[in-house]
Image 1 (spheres, rainbow, N blue to C red):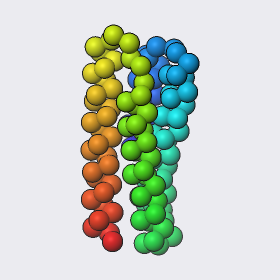
Image 2: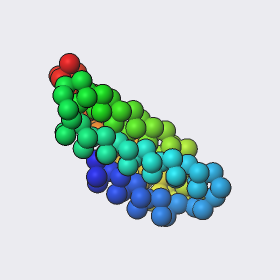
Image 3: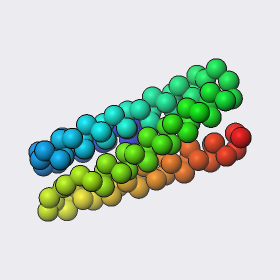
Length: 106
């Protein structure tokens, strides 16, 4: 999760500076950060119910991160498009892992 949030920030430093990208970037930063923070909180939870709730929030934030990644305008840069595709794939993997943990913990 930390690596995903860090890689998102690195990616955002290189995208075109349009009004839409600025707004979507802010949302993406919040979602990627929140996903990781909620995962950490889940591991320090007060009980099973709290654990599951925080994992569900983390999964929701990963989905939101993917949404904002897709909205970003990377211009004609094949390198940025490849990086975005990688990050989207990573978000899908994280979502699958979180979903598996949730279903096995219920």
